[in-house]
Length: 284
Image (tube, rainbow, N blue to C red; front, side, top):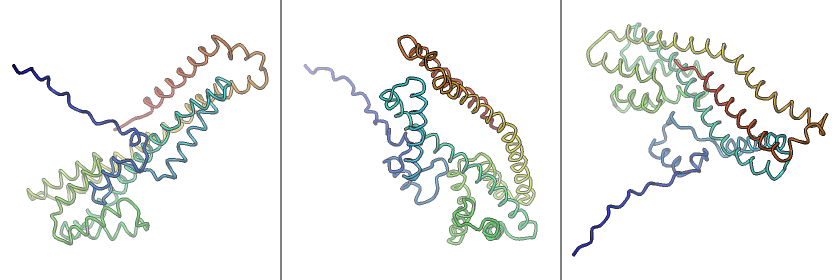
């Protein structure tokens, strides 16, 4: 008699914690780099080793000082300073968002150049080639995101690849809504024989207006963001001031139930920081 065999549970791959912490030489990062074929994947950002180490040390140092102010214990501060390992991840996310903002702004300038070339009677492919030269004059650095992308576009057009396919690949790697929408509209318009000049002009105008609104919002939120950071720093400054000027007044906090009170206050500050960050994160 055959015994029933229970189905095997699927083996889940272990989470790559090194990749989670944004270490540049993790296996997942190397795999994505190989899959991209040397092209930039704008949904991913690889920190250099120097950036990673600097961010981790700065984060660990800040956490160490904050923990020492709260607990007055070097061993406890050293243990808690390990939380600084999350700083490179946050720093990578910040750099990733900044790069996407730059690319969107640069793409708007590229559309203006393309629209001008089309209005002058050039073909679509020649308009992109002309925009490539205009962008080189506008952004002298060859490492500028849009210049590198138009380098790729020019090479691929030179070997006979369809422009629609090249733009689709670019929009997929960019992961930016404006570029994706432009690519979809451009592909549909080119296949159906629509007014390409009007489409690109309207698209560039819409993207420009959206970016202007985003910049206005960023300016308005910048002051409140600065105020929130001051508010987050005040408890630590106040605690340090009292510890230096009235240590006997603060002594009860560093024994018994005082540690529980300080821990609760520390978690409350962390919750306030997360809440303020979410409130000030406005997307269009």
